[in-house]
Image (tube, rainbow, N blue to C red; front, side, top):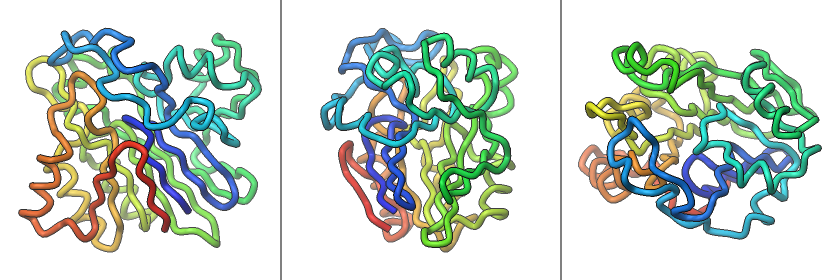
Length: 256
């Protein structure tokens, strides 16, 4: 398998002969306002350029949307991706939103899904700690992760927009992934409440999955990110975690 970090949570995964695009956010740098209700909302999004042309990014066999928040699925993606592209989504509510943009080839993920020999497993997540979810449930909404399995490939887990929680711990125990992708920029809403993983969350996954390679994604691309690649790498070095935790630049690839 080959992993390519595009920008934010946007990834390209080459797996068992298929090329799959994850959570496409394709707007040009600074095209969008900052997200309301989050810190630093005066900064425009995205805060980084795409590392390659859009036509290269969308040259794939399928798309997986972990959820339809605007930094995972935006108007630029809706306009660029062919309307007959196979799109996997977490539930009917997101599917309806995607259909309303003119897309016709949508599959709603069950717990286990067969895709040309690949098993796709939908996993739960928690888009923030309990308190922030109570206060902002409507805004944060439902999220999911995805596990990829194939007899000839390593087991691969994208946790999605989640903090460290029981659901993530359970998925690590149940599926024992070889490679784990974590959205790790410690994005925060007003009140300094984290809604995705920060460095301590990465450390918890590192301890819970002692045989896995961990990839820190969703870095340095949104207004409400509070953890930089530099700070995360310094933390990893202090903890002796560099051998198993990768922090890719946008456009960087790994083969496993």
